[in-house]
Length: 351
Image (tube, rainbow, N blue to C red):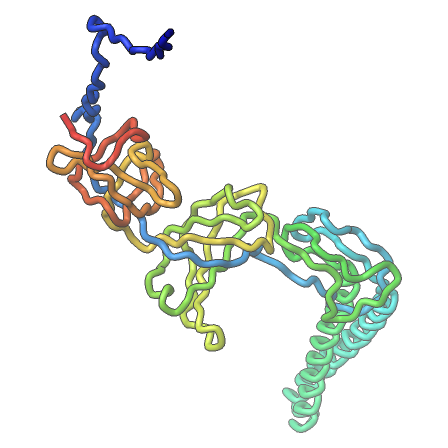
């Protein structure tokens, strides 16, 4: 009888196998104390923000002093003119006829005056010899005075007639640039009706509107930083030169004027935004490199009891030397980590 044997595999172990290695924790990196900087205060300007417009110093609607048909147009829009330059020429033929009439009338009255003076002299001589009564002398003297007044009035009328002729040439009241020409060749120019708008082309001025509360902080000499809406990155520094003595009763605002330096890119009519400096205050300031942006917030890493404390800070105005002021979160005298902030975390040791 044959017996079947079952073979069962047996696992063998090698007593000489090396044990599994045990992982060891690496020591956490520390922050060198040499990277710490001390927060210091900086004087920061305080300001209020307002708006306004740029204006030329002079802007005039040029009107004629006499009526007449325009027979010559001497300038166009954009032309530069000097004070006294001719702008238009009017038809003044009627005025010239009036001048001739006035001169002829004056000549006749001067002749009458000469005759009256001769009569006065003769009657005075006769009266001295008792040849004529005093009443005749008085009558002749009155006639002399009347003749003198007539001549004086005729001279004024002749001068006015001559002025009408010279006023037929409309001239620039000041130096500037033609902004608008309102009348054309052949049209009738009426006294007091605008023919042309002239704008001075020198330095501009800004008119700023100040609220009732803001106006009490502004005075002549207050510093202003302005930028045109069309040129937001190009600012101009100036000072307040004039302030309205009262508030506008309708808007409850007060106007402050600022004289601007020469600036080729600014033109009258531009809308401007102005920062009016009202004083200074002391605020903590740190290099921008000592702050880390995480999401929508800014963080500083403050040294507290030998450890790093991550702190959310609120930023204030930027300074010119690549520093930024801190509204909340830091105070002068705090020590913060100034570099290599990306790997820092709360509680990290400082050595």
